Length: 399
Image (tube, rainbow, N blue to C red; front, side, top):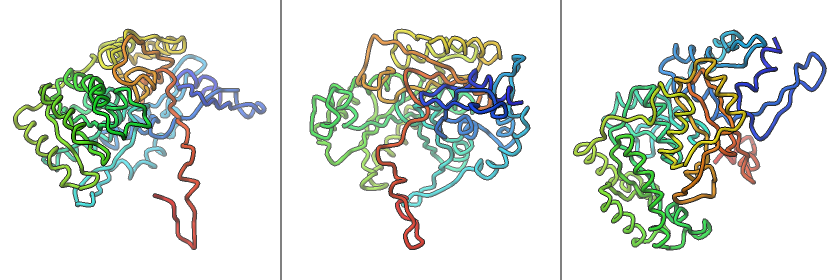
């Protein structure tokens, strides 16, 4: 049994930069194997949790998780191991969407938390559909850049859930625009109109990407105290020239009142100019390499895709298992359209390197690992754990 579980597990799991070696002891400790960890939001269980449409579907997906390949070359799954029921039992209560409320009593669901730079980046299908059922408008977030979160929202979540948004809101900040306009990160809080103007090329690429999906796009600019009216007017005028709706958002400091402008714009735009039927970036029938190439070239602006030997080997395994109809989730830096986290703005003349593929038969997607992105990021220099303690029976340091 240990040969089944450990010896070939690297054939289906991403090898992280932080390698863990098991089986170094005697015969009873198993066979020597290299592996690694994924942060919880990047785990297949999180993706399954978010994409499941019911408890029965959750069980089906859990049972289908691929654990490894036997010495006979056959897939070995959670169902074969016999622990699917135990895993579902742990998630029995969690699978139900969790409703909370804002400080102004607006209902909201917090359900699922994958990161779009290393996972598919969308909250649960169940929560989204429940919100659509009980509200006139349902707003959902696709995390990180639109080249990551939004692309995966359309190509994975919408494809599998059969939903399509009436409008896409692209959130921007003057500070981010300045960074993409070549301003040093330490100086982005300093007024710099030209820096904002240069950074608009990055925003325009995101807008064009969303429009390629058939989406009507409006820009929501989150205002910070250090922003100047002149900087914000540059963005407003640019959006008007592009025929794209624009609104300022000051909800962080003013609550609901600060979001009234963007709320009105959203309602008016949906009524007058809703999105067209959703266009996917690739077809289900495309092979995995073609799907990756279409995303890299059409969304990121890459010249081509380069596959490392490990990735090519995994592609052969994917084809052998008959999984090429799965959608693709590219794990890539969120700081750039390229795989270079420092290539801000609108980089050109670059390739996307895929070093490995991860086969997720439970969440029914193939994860392509691009560049040197890590699916188990490190802690900050000073993690919050250093400040959590129990003082006189009271826990402190949680916020």
